[in-house]
Length: 358
Image (cartoon, rainbow, N blue to C red; front, side):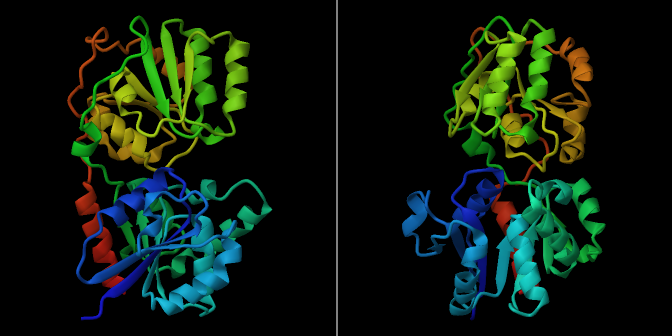
């Protein structure tokens, strides 16, 4: 029996949320009817998987330069399906498909709002126009929330092409060998994990700390907005209330020890950090701009997810939030995840789409 051949295309070995989902799929992949490979455009920061025979490492600084080589790979490997999770890459593949330069099925994974996904410069703006127009020619689109499903249908896709599959999480692996660590005992402790960029909205939380004396913030991550955040912390004179810990690969012990996980993003898809926090028993405070969280109605109802519109609204809600009862010697709390998908079931759903369209 001839297997269907699928190829995932990634720009690099970066370890963001979208990449984490893709590597989870790849590392847990098992299907007798599909052959799966990953192509990494810029393999400069490769890790242990570099010698895996199912990983194709290229050495291009930009995706656009790699297109001739990728076309060669598609032909050589006899690929049936391309899977792309980055809009700039998806836009190029859809353009090539439209002009019959490739005759391959395309699966686009769109975890974020298209209008927000391609911003920053003229090149990205042009790619966004291409993407918005040509997305209807894709063979399947995977979204992570009901909101994103409604959004993507505005671009004239047939509903049968759109599949809602939330990000996977392994409850057992996330909670394995976790010993909660608490860096503060006296104050309400909030923790943030993610890239320090404008999108994530950490600057807005700093305003909250300036008007609420009994709150501390732990910030885990790096990014180009960090310098601005440090300057604002000094300006607001809250240096004793904010701890920048840098990038930590698995910060689960610290998340498990905090009172709340906070995600004040200006826009977002379905953040893995929210799922991980709930899995560790740490409730989440988040902006209503993360529309995917509206799907978690049971969590909103039991207040394990608290949504807010503005800092003033959050400040009022902060007053009714309490420190965990075991704050002096924190223990791992029960999972707060109610509706979630395991990596195994996630893979089954993706594989089913591949076999359906190939």
